[in-house]
Image (cartoon, rainbow, N blue to C red; front, side, top):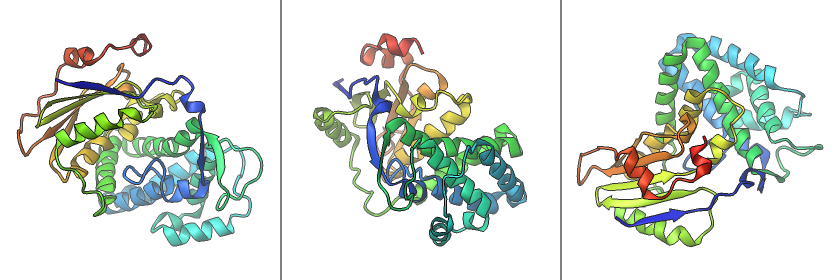
Length: 303
């Protein structure tokens, strides 16, 4: 089996400077188009999902979430809210009916960016630390799920959230996202990407035309959330959507298996994609297999 390694560990990766437009990040897209983490878009879809699946809990959930976010807000960063809220009202389907929740979500997301001085949240482009950018879209989602577990219980809340994540991510696919051919081609593209620097460290191997294995040796998202205590919630918001994306963006030809995750305290994430056109054997390789793909660094073992 040929094995390649992509990326290099960067101890200062969360301090890197990135440039964003805050309002676009909160409303339209955060992270990337495929795995859209824009907090207002996700919240809008989540409220619609709850209204459709468990309408009896919707009002209590909205009340509890509004209060939970209010408790996190240190100051009002929106200033003159009118232009922002008018724009949001036009772009959302349900969250605009709950103006206080909308305000609190925006305020909290902006607060997490750790910006100093007054800016035009709708127009100005700003330079911020990458860690703060990641937190600005992941931490609101953490609270979306936390409050859901407090509203209907942890087991039921996580179960409902997973269904919502799968449906939301499936809805994001466009006709332009249909480039998948085979796992062999995916491996070749990964080989060609080695020359490009990446802060995400991955070890990749191709076992057969039906099985592609990869080990994530770091996770910027989890590194940015070390102050948040609940591993189950972090796994649900950071990792669970990968199952749906692997299926959706392979034209429903591959299924992802994943046994170890950094989110749950493991030294790496062990993953495999199985092309079901060739083989329905979804057996996940052993921990020993993933340990031996490439030396596991001491910095990982100490986790």
